[in-house]
Length: 383
Image 1: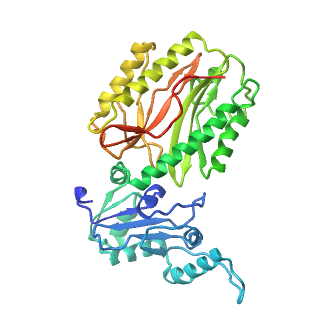
Image 2: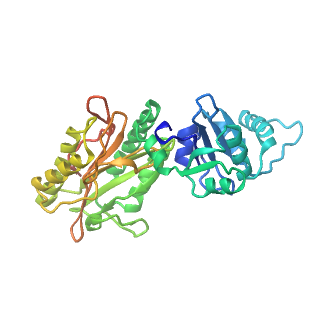
Image 3: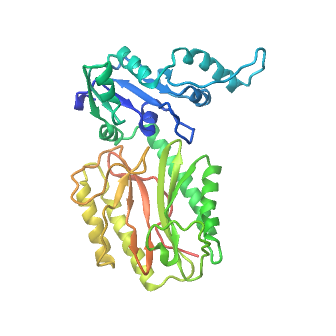
């Protein structure tokens, strides 16, 4: 915050709320009352989490590191007298009795918390458009609201030890589900069942499938949503796999290519070229490496290895509470890698009328180089 001369941060986007408080929201829908987290520049001030009263159910079931919890909005629940409660119900009832005493309209609760923390004046960054200006126009005339989305992304660029552990576990779970999906990729298999295999295996391991950008055959040439199209895998074609999910809100993203039978010479050459590009970048991952130089290296390597016309808009992206976090491997980018960054390196290929390829890994930048968090071999998979 000192770098931006901020008096504090106000988060409304869920990934930023999770980052500030550890609150892993479980409701999969949006409520009228927002969820917010407030962090003062004063290290002695409490971290405050503001949630709708119904979300006290989640607080009753998990641990957060917010120092204080407030509620905004309303909800109704009836507790008959002398009714026996389960332990989680009892925790919820105690939270409800304490935290809903001061609930109110969202803006009034936020205003009250900001005033108590001395954040109703000076430079405060908000990741929600308009909220800061509404407060300034009403009851906080000395507030200087700033757009905070990029500030939060900058802060989250270097991961904590706990975040690294969650990202590593997320990557392992995704690869485990991917292995089951790869095993299901045989001639005659229904594409919808293959996609469901990954989703079920992710859920079995405590994670959530968030995307499936995979595709078989010639339609692997782009990111086509083929679920529901009665696709069946055929001998002699290949599958471009690119998929991921979340584990305790932290993303995973990886990919490989599977040949259903002996691959053609072109498939072997093109896949080897993409692999060479990824491995060339991976060898140069270390603190101080420049993003634009890594990008140029990857493109140059793929072209020299067999795809002379190869090009990309990027060769990787940072990953964390968002799949595409700030930072990555981009053309002419001046970003320098630093220890604690976690990023995906990918060199996919898309060609309409032929098909596509994918190879992608996740890396942690260490003090001396990089550690691969994904573990699947780089060879073209042949079934």
